Image 1: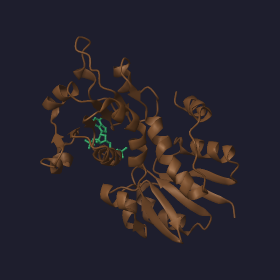
Image 2: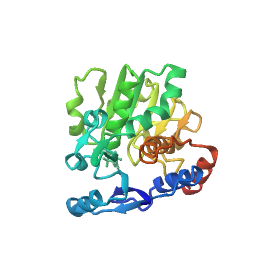
Image 3: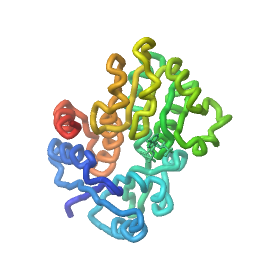
Length: 266
Ligand code: ATR
């Protein structure tokens, strides 16, 4: 039976995951397919049963808004997805569905080089949605001393007040911390610091956006003189372990893949 994988979410028709997987299928001569399945939130309960019943499915990626809802549907969770409280990768293991999280390790790999080379210790993270939780878990595992966190809805981050290593920011603290952090990470679909930056007082820290389309997000375009870490590297790095687990080959993100993806990121 030809093996199959999917990305499941409410708005995945534009996802670049199928491009990545299909590039690797061709490169490694694997006879398999990867497509997308769009589900409306109100149909999740019913649709997920059909997905689990599909015998040809080796696994699937799951994204907004189901990364937390899937937790109660899988047979078990691995350590990382349990701790993070979100699943982006579901694998069939001995006929059971196991929830995993490769968002955090994908982000970890994307910034690891810059962190170690420049001994980065203080981060500022903008946003506290599903993806941000994996980002924070990666920063903790990279041994950041201080993680400054800001979210538009302050209620959602109140529980982090007093957590070791965390500083919860309100809007007035945010501007100051932009100048004292070693790396600035955006996990929101917008650019909330736009009107806080001035030409007279430049920021040197590397800037990182987890959004991959467009490549030059509004946020990253504020940092043209800085080192920039693009969202596409997190997408590729979270996909690689899923590919390896489902199809048995550790894939390499070569230049050809970046060239193909560039065409879709305009
Ligand atoms: P994801 O799973 O990709 O992180 P999400 O769970 O919808 O997506 O989270 C989006 C994040 O972007 C949240 O932190 C959200 O802030 P709220 O918690 O206040 O909703 C933030 N966000 C989205 N739109 C925003 C906007 N226009 N201004 C500021 N923050 C925004």
